[in-house]
Image 1 (tube, rainbow, N blue to C red):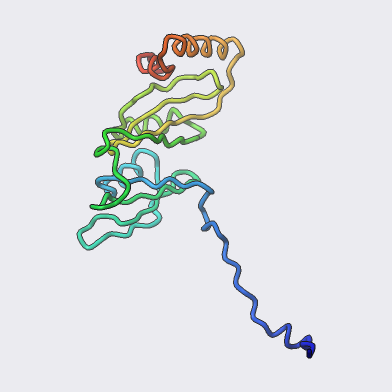
Image 2 (image 1 turned 120 degrees about the vertical axis):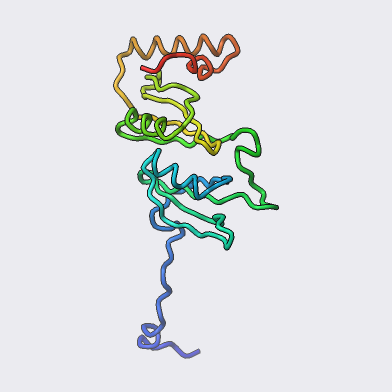
Length: 184
């Protein structure tokens, strides 16, 4: 068997390396099904400061695919189409997913989203796990939780945890009790 010369080995073209994760994406990326995806993009811009990345409309104006960036994360979405396996929350009557957003000034983003028309489902409050946290539902039925890590005294954490565990012991989720607690 003949040996290949060094020249022959060097002349092979190198395969281009393709990164398996597209630039700017994280390992997990939410993909939302929305009735009115174009309107949702506009709302997410107003409520969360989203930046539009991609918008791919069909001839009738519905979006077959879109991408926005909120902070350093990408959220993909499309309108709902007949025969699709996914449905929007307004068709299902609820959503089983909450999108968590961490920010430096959670109260500012919270107010921005509320001013844009988000429905408060759990008021903003300091939580026993050391975050200022609240939950919202957008006009399209998707759930969002907004939070930032905060410093809390041990006494404050212990009291908040005691209150939450009391609700669990009564068969209620702690979030349900906080829906009537005034925001701080």
